Length: 370
Image 1 (spheres, helix red, strand yellow):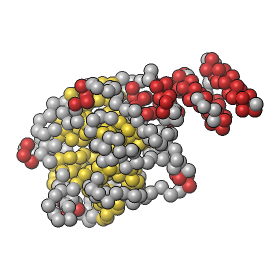
Image 2 (cartoon, helix red, strand yellow; image 1 turned 45 degrees about the vertical axis):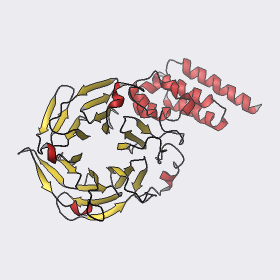
Image 3 (spheres, one colour; image 1 turned 120 degrees about the vertical axis):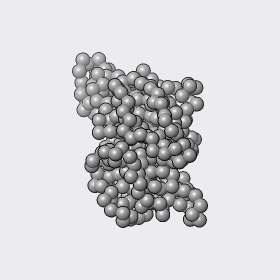
Image 4 (cartoon, one colour; image 1 turned 135 degrees about the vertical axis):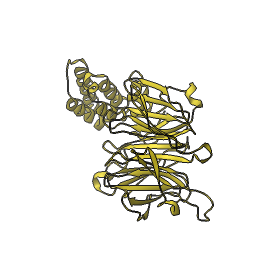
């Protein structure tokens, strides 16, 4: 009887908040906490869906996404009427739905502007998608080789890399060639690009572990071989370079396919390492993507495994171990992960597959994307 009474009280409070001309997030949070404690089937999702539709939650995209990530998998359709960006950030999936022309394209990169939460996707053929209030699709013509990766400028504009060394900055108004083509088709082996957060210098790496630093004056690439010894298989026959990233203290990090991360100051040739994805990283050459957040290294493998190093051990981190706020490996349903973004402020992880599907962590660990 007490359960029924409390459940009815929650329904009355829900109706009041839904019909009110104004409310605040704290009032909705209070109601949601009461609903959690009762665990009445379906009631929590009704509260979440009503909150997401209220004017209160239209003012802050990050709050909206956080709440939407708590929806039960069976009620994910409750947010179908919202903008595509909101849905993708909350539950993942394919931005354009299934069976569209984009399914035939090979995706290579994902970036998310942490300020606007705009999502950018890039394909090999140069198709660039921006998910803001609506999806904007444009095609950038390549010169030599396919497009292979991208990063964001300080203004949140995509900077695209071709395998031949050409770099193009794309804004709403124009496309600017930052760096011209450097390599011929036969020598177009570049695979990743990263921007130094200190001075904006662009760095790229090829599949053999050769670094190149941009020289904006001569508009050319300066060769750097410091990581070559760590970019080979043990027998020396095959290249193993995968990704690079730069931190705010002037350190460049290099990832090979074995999950080893080597580091070096941008001002020195001394190399330190390796650091490895220490939390159950598989004994296979499956490392794919590298990220740096402060002093923490993020490694993602091609199957969706997420390996931060050092592994979070503080009680404040581990309390989220069984929630969507604590990223975990993905089920091996779509094993072609090509790139990732981790928004550490929110603990949101986004993985991009070769087919253009976006996978993200949610409240319900067994279900990551549509």
